[in-house]
Length: 226
Image (cartoon, rainbow, N blue to C red; front, side, top):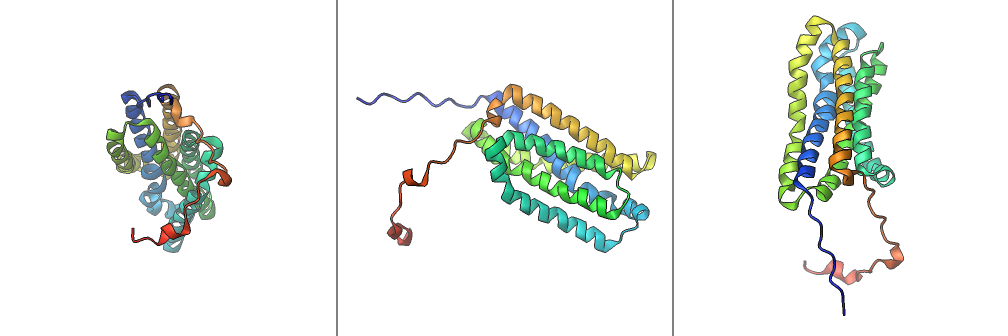
């Protein structure tokens, strides 16, 4: 006689709230402060570092290309370190890179740092889908995903509000440094919240069964009308 399987444990609302809050803040860091801060400060930086419009285009392209390459590498990293670990490390690395741009003395070095911010963005945003699917109740997942996506706007709002004031009071280097240190603080606070409220975010995905154990679909099934 088959035994009844144990009821599936539903994610708690506190976990969903923590995931939504932390990931929205993380999205603000890697996109709103990371990728888009360069465009906001380009005119200030080019006067000191001496680069032109072509360099701005190359930096923007490098960030997008590194995002694409990181997207291919992300699944391997999440299998090795877990999705939550990759997300936190990406945000922490973004904060370090933001701070490092403040010390750049050449356009090439600045381009390298900004380009790597694109990879950080991919390593943060891609694993969030898996974490949300495991830790947020089904009826709230679309809302949480929408809220997390809006984090870019919050980051741009923060950068657009703080950057002009900091440039006037100090210089463009202070903008990168202050926002970079703030991003590292956000990464640490988010890590603490996830560890306490959503420990499942750091669980590794179960290994896929060997190919020999996977049922083989008949080739004919691919050619059906459906």
